[in-house]
Image (cartoon, rainbow, N blue to C red; front, side, top):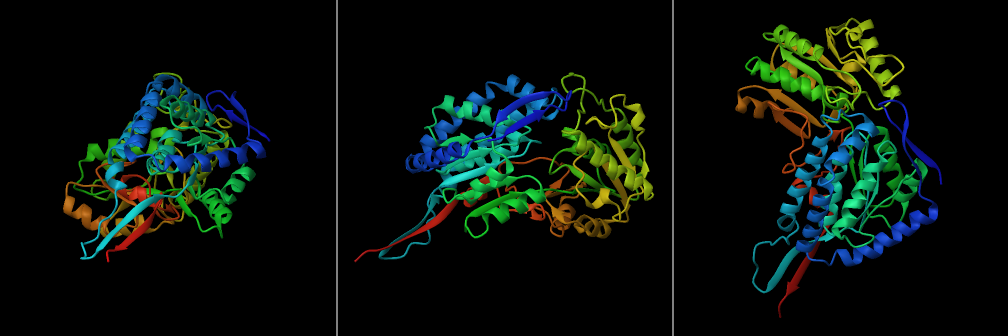
Length: 461
């Protein structure tokens, strides 16, 4: 066993401390998960839906406490933290509502003398590894569909947000979920790899960094199990000259700065038609200058600290490198009194005169920076949007839906937005291309990764 600590970015204090699970506790949890799943998978889907719904009710009833804990664990402003509980509820309830149809048998065309159908069978034990930046919104994408499909779940949450796993356990216990169907483990890195390698685990769902995804693939190599990877992003937005300019300014700024830019699908690169470039830059700069950076437990704050000092220093390094290479920083960091080197409190920044030779345009930033380039039109925007090793989401701002679709068909991305960004619609497949990962969660398609097809071919004689 070892110890994990959540160092709060609010004030640097130790907010939570937990011992990691012992080897015996890990094996006990895995064995209990296998046993519980054998009974759980045979429970009618309607009963699984009812129990998951009760768990969502129990979770949502503690919205205030959960939001406060979230603020202290990872730094999101208390004015925004309750939204994660609402998002958890939205996604969970949608997946509960569609489960029966999504998990129903598939019926091919009738054939005389035969009964034929494809059944969707649960995989077994699903091991979910969740991150700190949206600890509930990322984990719900796999937890609820996995349970609805008849799998048991073991959750490993980030050491930065251990209370999130405990809150979820509390909700499922209060709902009356059978023991062993949902469990969490506080684990160190070595034990996490060992669980992935356990013959009792049948699927791994990971959300996190590209290096973390590489670790999961290495650990699972040779086991012939499914692995879902939701990794990083360097998501672009393209503002066409026919866009509703104020809407684009407001939406792109929020999409880049919400959660201090610590979102896998946050906007990190902006390409703007030259005809409206100056006006767009002026609007974004004015809006960003009005943000309030400060302690996230202050109700007036709308930009909290980054999760760690090291994360803030990484972003400062990207900004400094870009400026040294010719970029211009339009925001005076000194105008934000809370901004301080050596702390996680980082002033937002707007960068112009950037290009793809700079790290800030190619390397995931994961911080409150908006980098803006002027483009001559659609062709240049498409080329630059595709000039990335990532492909999670991309957004276009335009009044022309036909053009948006035509351009979207050429952009390498998992989700294509028009006039919005930084959002997961639970009715749509959540997936990425290139280094943004593989696999899918949410929507009816998301159930396919969490089940296996079994064909029934019955001949009547």
